[in-house]
Image (cartoon, rainbow, N blue to C red; front, side, top):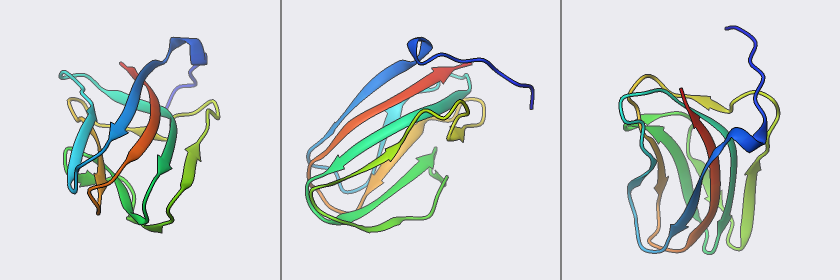
Length: 109
């Protein structure tokens, strides 16, 4: 893959405020283009499993027993954490219907 120069100021943000879902929730919509996920920060209120998907395709295994009142951070590193296929939406799956808060910074290419 060709080297890219990306500044955090170019990112498109999405706020995560999931309060009552126990399934996959689409949080970034592709609109037929390709999404790259550059940063994720999530705060979990109650212990549960969390997983990242692209149109139902698992991007990682379940983050099992993600503890209550804790956070996960995938910081900006200069390279995307996830590069989805053309037209795929980014989804977060939860195992409990409880509060999950945070943000995702992404680009549409």
